[in-house]
Length: 249
Ligand SMILES: *[C@@H]1O[C@H](CO)[C@@H](O)[C@H](O)[C@H]1NC(C)=O
Ligand SMILES: *[C@@H]1O[C@H](CO)[C@@H](O)[C@H](O)[C@H]1NC(C)=O
Ligand SMILES: *[C@@H]1O[C@H](CO)[C@@H](O)[C@H](O)[C@H]1NC(C)=O
Figure (cartoon, rainbow, N blue to C red):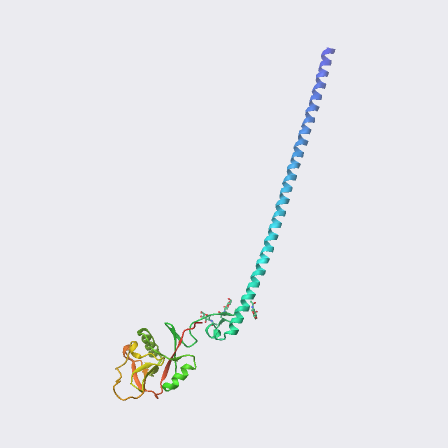
């Protein structure tokens, strides 16, 4: 009985010790896990911090990169603006061909002909509303930087005829066309003989008759192929002026 009691006691103590031991090892394990957790948390925090620092550094370097870019672009704009102003100050004719299109932005639009002139092929044409004799018409066109119109192709003839038709109100227009007092042959005012190109006389002028200087006019009737007439040069007519389209050559 005593022995059995003692054994039971011993057993009880042994169990208690085992239990204590087990709980101790539990605690140790828990502490172990906790320190592992702490370690992991520290690592994660460190990584996060590193990431943040990285992002800050990157965005800082990006914004300073952008600032540099902006500064560079501003400098380039400044230089372009200077060249632009210099160009328009040194070549005032550019203002005629490239007038400011939008006064708030200073935007310009370039075009090959001046206002009131119409482009056809490589020439700009101007149709006057006032009248003058042939010689004065030459001077008037020259004062605009051009000459009385010459017609070298059928295309030009058709175009000028149609333009004249739409605005003549019954008037005729001087062409840069005149006969020679010496042999009665016709030439354009730039010196080209008429016979080198197409002709659109209403009827062929008589070159064998009297040697009187005559001038050529365009009278828009029904047929563009038959719309040139020879005419006394002192007649008061409208005029067509021509100019080369804008070019810097
Ligand atoms: C360009 O230059 C002109 C005069 O030089 C100045 O008035 C204008 O403000 C400048 N524009 C820009 C965008 O810098
Ligand atoms: C600007 O250009 C457009 C098209 O080229 C034109 O219709 C407009 O009238 C112009 N504006 C001015 C103020 O010249
Ligand atoms: C001029 O340019 C500004 C800015 O692009 C625009 O808002 C305005 O309508 C333009 N004005 C004309 C007359 O085209």
